Length: 291
Image (cartoon, rainbow, N blue to C red; front, top):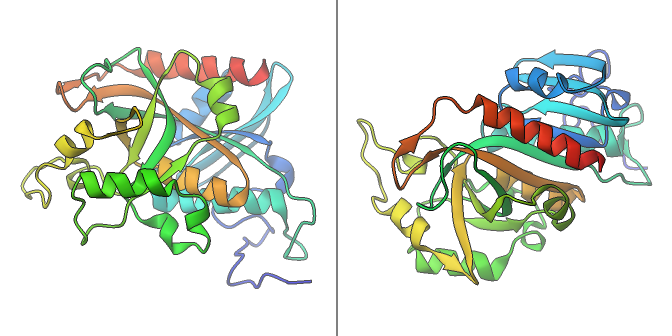
């Protein structure tokens, strides 16, 4: 019996996982992930019943029932570093006995569905009532490379082609591309634009924005916009999906990101009134989950 030491599996004083502050019985198998902690209450406002409400820092969880199906809504905060914490702790809740600190013999597969906002990288994807389901995630963050076995999750030919055709700088983190859950894409992604969601390690220069500081790769967005691989385009920019897809693939979970397009980086359009579309996406996703 391989016991995971205290410094590796960090628990709070009450025995909950350290950052999420959740106990295993407080988590459902179907999980809606949102970046904004305030958005958790919007998701759970559709629930018929709420069993648990737990919060710690920017990490908020509401678990309840929607049309008879048990669902958790969990906020992650922004960035792949937060996704690293959240996905590992969700997996620990599902697949590790927190009392004995040993991995369960029978492993559980969670459904992790990220609903977020994003900027389109193609001129034909409109701002507003437009959803993009990420068939693939392109990681510009480098996080997955810290994990042994990462190569088994990465679409290597697609990744290598991207690196070569965009003249990706060697001093930048090595990109990686991971596929979404085909099951979730089929169940939840109907009617959405499909494409590759690019995940950036920042909001400004890593997404081609320049205020007072200049860009190291001035044509980065142009290279990304014009790249395609076997008819797969890079459709949008955000900050979480690559780590979500990569870690989920390694841990045996199903992952999918669907984003509301609130900006278009090509046409320079931006919508500051996107809340009705977020609400529509949440409602649509919950209904499809229970079908």
